[in-house]
Length: 585
Image (cartoon, rainbow, N blue to C red):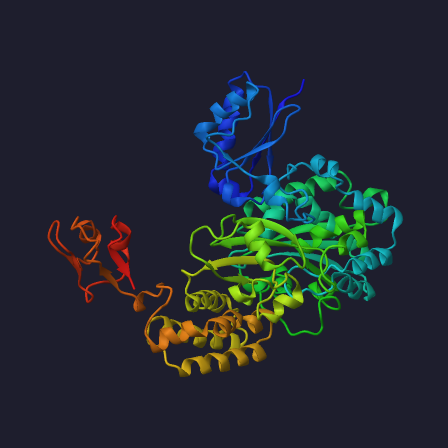
């Protein structure tokens, strides 16, 4: 007998939005009887702005995806579906096909589709087929050549060619080698790795096993930040299942190849995303970068040859082996092949996880895939690459998503965080935010990073407070140059990028803060003031009642006035006013 199929998105994003309550409501309705249905869990569908999400597929009928589901409406919805109806009126219907139309999902091929903790689901989706092919039909050299030919570049930051990285580790003739997956995703606004780890953990494991075979490693580590408990739980289950089925451990799939894989929980230090600091953390030392050379391929974990790639890079491997290098490099540009996963966040209509071919214009990612701006405020900039990246302005929206084009703007591809900003955003404040993050996360080893970022942050704070000087701009440039030259690791070297790109494209905002003591976006409290429009004020007294400092005076049904000396610019009056009488300038 055919059943109704019900699938609930139960990744961290879904659970945070209430998916667990929705799932429970479905369980309770099914337990009450009268509905023959199969209830399933899946990972992040990518459409985070519509969470909680459920997919319903009646026997022989189309699948309908419902978004923003309220647990209270579940029983009624299921009753109507059981009666042969797929209701649309009164519910949020997610245009899944439309949303996915401009995407090519290679890394995300299984996320939001399979049950992430079911190895059988993964195997049914061609899981471990690539591993079998590698062990049965391919030499180690052939595997490396295939990855080279694909054009895959590391998806964690600088974009170093993956096959070449593997080749370096393979060339080392040492008795012990390691493979590490860098899943220490620490960029503000980034959640690509988390979603893949939660939604398709076996794809990472299979990619790592293939890498280990190719370079001759027998042991590996998944370095995952401890703030990702669901990802860690799913990985633990996947590792246990893979070992039980013979895909990990001794004599993998009946071959002479052995490989053991462990999970190392990181403590949340941003600097541990840098590979030498990451290895130090695994070794039990404080996570601090080390001088290179030697590079990890020559002397890495415990001084043995080590290959490190990030989550997204490993997630591509099995697909490339199964489908061939030519199928992969058919996507992308001459120097940037394949696809790229982005975490769309900020001022965008459809926030979430997307995967697009390299070479897609930023405009298409934001407006076609992301749905554009959520309000009438125009697009202003997009932050790419997190704290190590930069802000790309509206004038460069036609920039292609590839390593070379993005780098030319002053930003970097990074791991794939994409924070969209509208005209209500102060770019000086944005630079301050990211620099504050980097300064706090500096390991302190390099004077230029430790002290230089602190001095830059102090200048930005002074500018936002209306105490800036025009000479501060030259000082920011000087500090940025020295920090980039004097820092040991890539995180310190790129720390000034948010400041440099905002100065490059939004220098007028810096000058407005300094010369005119004005924040054009109305964000920096020290540079804004609140007044009451005499034509709109009806004397309702609500603003005065909400003011925490009693800065507003006035009689009932008469014009109210704000005492600027008492006003702390909290904005409570503007929020309280129902008539738009409070003006922020």
